[in-house]
Length: 247
Ligand SMILES: NC(=O)c1ccc[n+]([C@@H]2O[C@H](COP(=O)([O-])OP(=O)(O)OC[C@H]3O[C@@H](n4cnc5c(N)ncnc54)[C@H](O)[C@@H]3O)[C@@H](O)[C@H]2O)c1
Image 1 (tube, protein in one colour):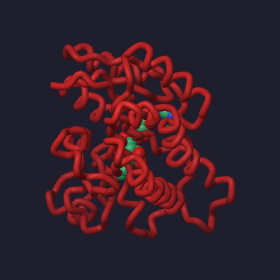
Image 2 (cartoon, helix red, strand yellow; image 1 turned 60 degrees about the vertical axis):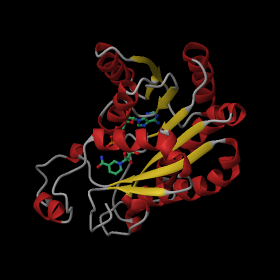
Image 3 (tube, protein in one colour; image 1 turned 180 degrees about the horizontal axis):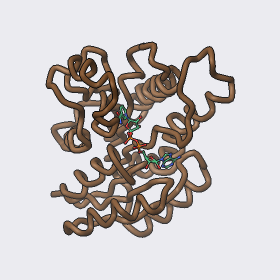
């Protein structure tokens, strides 16, 4: 068990909630962020109801001032943040579809959450980790950042590839300070729903024969946070049941 502090963004439901719960079960005091206040409270209740420690941290990761003041307040309440999991990555109302049907302004939504949002959190929390000589930065990414498919997610995939590329550079900058920086590229998770018409074909492309669960991602996060995980940095690790499609 640890007594460290972790901040998980977009943790009000699904993948982020699974990560927050896994960290709390391992003893982390968890700051549960989401845009939606009701969702942060639900995750906090789930954790505190099982004896864990969590606080609700509703803010918009795309707003640098909101992020800076929320992180300062969280650190005053919980102590220094040791682990950042940048999980918020699906913009509310984000438009999917082909590039040819998109407009230049559509890019802002995806770059806004996956690149600016993640780096806003790092501007606020990373200097403290470097100063204290220990930290973990984990970006929740997607196979769509590595593999091209004609399924209407090129702007989303491009923004994931962008943040992964930036983080590889960042890992080199902060490696000597005891801070590791990695991305987890997820395959299809169980919140996509099992009733979509192509599900049989999608499952046929996943050798382990099932969609991912939030706890699968929670387990990978815990390993990266562990001391045995300390020699892994600058990587994109695919967590996808061996998917032949990459996502
Ligand atoms: N679900 C999948 O199949 C899948 C596959 C590959 C990668 N991923 C990645 O996993 C992560 C989580 O996905 P999910 O399916 O659990 O998403 P989700 O939409 O179910 O949950 C994400 C949460 O993020 C919150 N959020 C959105 N914008 C925010 C903002 N600006 N600031 C703070 N919070 C914000 C939302 O309110 C929501 O509660 C994302 O980074 C996504 O790209 C998911």
